[in-house]
Length: 80
Image (cartoon, rainbow, N blue to C red; front, side, top):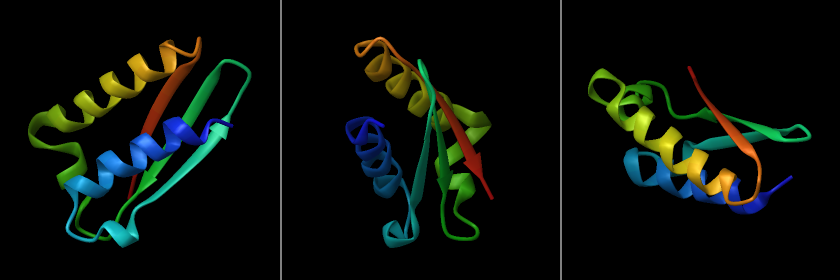
């Protein structure tokens, strides 16, 4: 597992929400692909997704670039 990528994602999401202490990022590591599940306080999922998914797309882009530098892939799931 790569705590660096998980910590990066955690910090990004914490900056977007009103309750950063309720942010949970879970990493499921495979051989070449990491899946990151994001959970936030009730009612704050929209803050992470953004208008028409713009923030979620940006987060995925940042994480994909960071993972690619390590020869990996990153999949981001935003859960209720």
